Image (cartoon, rainbow, N blue to C red; front, top):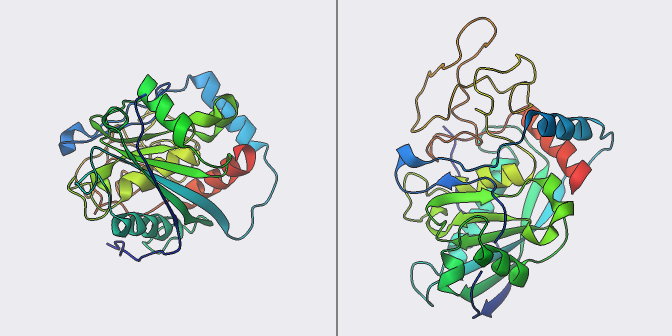
Length: 295
């Protein structure tokens, strides 16, 4: 299985801040600690809302450039200077490298056209923000103080994860609350972090997938159409529930209506970082259309 290698990226802006407390509504969140607890607290869309969004995306008739460059601002929220929560520049560079390899297909999946360029790093010492949960006032205050750029700018916040590996906003939420837009990841999920088996950087890969408009591969379970499915992508096989570890050959939706084994190697499942290495062609197309529609 192809994996990522860390490559440094230079020439970024470093800003150090020291501030105080404060977040917003529920989104995507994967649980941290044990593999069996790696759940996601995504606010489920109603069937009507999901269909409305899919229709909006389907109406997009534009064409993206061959390469879409996404500026990234990486916000390190730490409990102290120089401790484990103060993620090093080397780790940040490695995380950006993992994102680029995942999204350009060099790990074995589809080339999605997206590339990520680190535009700046901020460092903030604030224990309240470090432990901010999804939807809390601490999260809202943190993002209000730190967020950079417009709808096409990716802001990554490195925190404790508040018991989760990460969460993200969907692109169609941007217009209603621009300040809230972005991705939160557990500080120790980056390449070389301590959150094994989720320490190769694919928490960010997964959450950025949500930020670009993807659902989990298991959304809708087996109660989904054979063509579009609960994740609104036709080439990700139906999956009854999230997969953990790396269960090769798992086939949780059986019968002629559901061809193919579960997509355990897909970045939008819950398997260990070493197991996941690809986006599908259909996911690439959906991200392009969602980006064109909302970002």
